[in-house]
Length: 248
Image 1 (tube, rainbow, N blue to C red):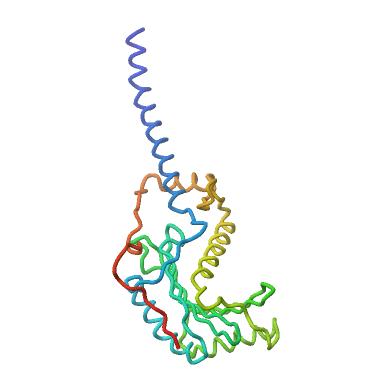
Image 2 (image 1 turned 60 degrees about the horizontal axis):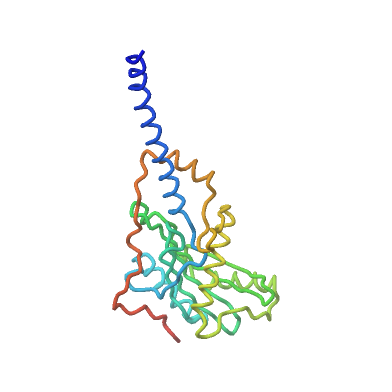
């Protein structure tokens, strides 16, 4: 009897150890995935540093900025969100045309994982005009092979069709561009989170993915998942001066 019991235990104990080990690994993977894909409720914006501008963005800015200036736009802010989410960074150069109240932005979303660098979407040029009642017209393009003026003219036609010719859009006051962009970044984060059915945590700091979705993802990747520390776009203290927008 004792020998039989010992024989059974010798078979059962390793199985139990395996089950416990897999369960712990599964829960740790799920927790790590939930933290990785969380979205900050208020993404931190900083002045863009030179090392945060990759060649493809610099080339896009050099091509587009002079044409925007010819249309009456002036550059008022250049900001960088090192973690718009834990897997994406975001850079924006904001231009305004105060006479008409139009905004133009050069936007660039980049994946932070080294294996995905270079596989994101290219920089974009976006025009936006927001009426005082909150309605807005937006025009975006990722190709600027032709004159930027053609894209802006199309945007103005859409604005005139919706708001009339004489509307003056809402733009941030001089000196208030960074707080204004910070507020907009929080709105964007909330919109993305709600579309993905993320829930705000108890402290109000992050939007987190639902556990059901996390568990499904963890089950698929638990055998190959390795914790990753974002690199390449961390903002650290440095004597480098921020890139100041050109004024005209």
